Length: 94
Figure 1 (spheres, one colour):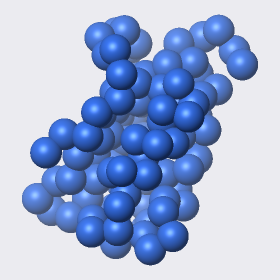
Figure 2 (cartoon, helix red, strand yellow):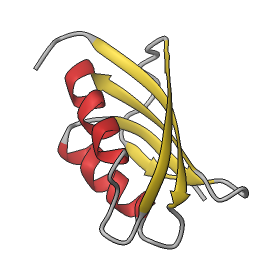
Figure 3 (cartoon, helix red, strand yellow):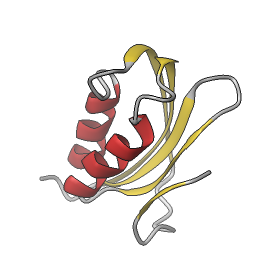
């Protein structure tokens, strides 16, 4: 694992709501010791912010391109931002 900290703001589109995308994202992020949040958007996309070790954040982003078994991911838009360290854990926002 690298020691460089990273923050990514991610938007996932496709069939990504109603398929346990948020719950699975939380599990994957927690497994990789990545903190932040994930939520559904009214337009059908899923939005997330990931912070943590650069390698771990990239692993979670890589997973977002696949998603859980019933998801059909069409696009993942990633914007890297300045790391803030503001999160203590990973939450699902409603």
